[in-house]
Length: 459
Image (cartoon, rainbow, N blue to C red):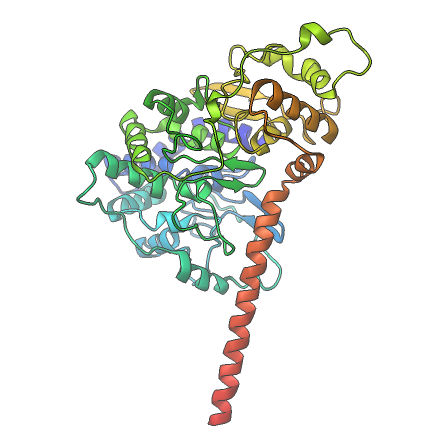
């Protein structure tokens, strides 16, 4: 919450600071503006601006089970940022995840997607950061993971497996609109980073592009045109509204990481780019999921308020929690009001996974679009003590909402809630990835030492 508030405070100042700095630096205004647009589409500010920090000065902490990864300073500070980078060095860092001194970045920075950035856009991005971003002599905390993960050279193997080393280029088979959409979805907005499932080494699974994936406590849903698990039943208008505002009426509201994408990136995209993204998403191959019914078509208005109000014994804990905590905003019938969505015909309550409903209850919703903040409080550990809900209460109310308004086949257990509360899904996947990566690195080291000893023996 503090990070979002800080970003909201500094964002209005960024154009002023940029304009003042650009007045004394080389680069045409058109080129700088193009670079700014690329930076917005690539969502650079969100990860490179720390809570209460200066724009693009880095230091935002990304928590992992084996340590904290801090984002870098990408202002033109010579001492602490990219001020000493020439364009070739800047391009290698963005596209390949390698700094001028040879240090490898972790793929928490989505350089595999950015590898497709065109030369023209990369040049504009470079000019923008060098000419229109104020230098900040801020040194972010150093990332210091434990052995063997602190040996960044281990990323060489991962890059050999998963880094495309390929620039975007339109194909003869696609229209200019679809080509533009592919560039935005696959490269600049790097949608597949969250929406494509990962294998054991955390590389994208072949044939499942944009098919949905676990993202910490949240699920990034299937955004292929599959009619049951994907967005095949969404209209173009609903998709455009979702990307521009975070709201698709009677379908979904953006929360968690997607709320940040809307807040810091897609709301600022031109309408033509939004339409291009939609055209491309209509064009990608469908990925089949586990759903047997479209997520947005479950449930109906209803509820037990009239029959259960006033009872004090043998009352379902789920209804009791819903009535006392949720009904004020979502209404006793689940129909919602104002910015609070209906709980039926809702892709969260109609999902084939309980994760996003539980995560929403725990962590809440907050995004600011066009100056208006959309807010739902979280009832997890960060809540005021009077509003905190126990695992038992969240389990009960989630099951009540699924049964009354959503997918009745969903069942939430206390362990599901505990996992979400601790963001255990992220810990599990990252632990698996880093453990395998460390094992592979250790194996490479052992084989290398054996080869060296054999060579010396032969000599």
